[in-house]
Length: 387
Image (cartoon, rainbow, N blue to C red; front, top):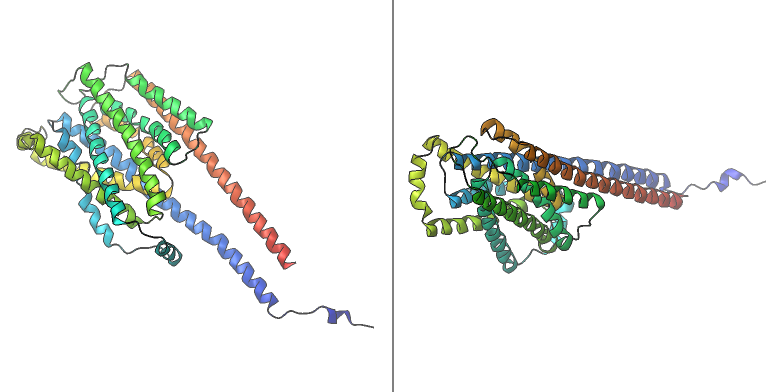
């Protein structure tokens, strides 16, 4: 009679292999959670830069015009000239892990003959866009200005459809419709731009400010889509250093362009007189310009960072999230009025924002379900192999 215990063969190293497989599975489950936490922390930091930089920069820019400032090119210049404060961040060592470093090494770096035209084009476009934004800040109130800026989400969606293969869904279309109506309502009202200032402008100036802000919003949406396209086709990698470098080079070109126009137009001759006649004093004049420069650099870093981590459309959505902040602060500090048309416009703008965010939530759920399905399939295949 044969002993059945002899048939139960023991394969050397089989148990060790099973333990190693289970350890690898546990590690693979732990790594995504750590990466996800790190991703959310980075998104939170960049979003804070966008929201705080945008709100503070907008209010300080309007305060400059309300208290005696008149130079459009100086207001455009300070939106870009703060880039030197970012140079020390280039000295910070990279915190990427070895796998990310190896992946970046394998990626071919773009040629300098590609980068120079890219940065010059983006920088000149940025300079012109800042000029349009400055004209808008001069002629219309902060509340109207920020509400018109919500249209940049619609423009960005349109450009992303053609340049970044962004898909249109019913919720995104609904978002675009609400944002369009929100901006259109503002054209029908007479804007009270005086606030805490003696300056009042005609209906013609209001329309000029409206159209310039609308054009700047379209330009900003286009620039975000082009930036995302550059990341996908030219850089093909992501790092904090690259974000800082891109911000510095774009701002450098924009600063040089604004300086050339500032001196060519002769506006530099009146700056000393403007500072002496500034209602809040010389120190406040200088502090206002410095604060504006720092705020917009923080906004730019956060905006480019969000494009890296998610998309140009998401970066724009976070920017739109700050829409209620500036009008509330302008009522508190600049004494601007909030009428019924502006309230309706703000409600529609936030409705458009929530519609887009709900679509982003649905996309996130879809990605998670696809990951769960793929993980279940891999676990089944591992079980079949072990059996």
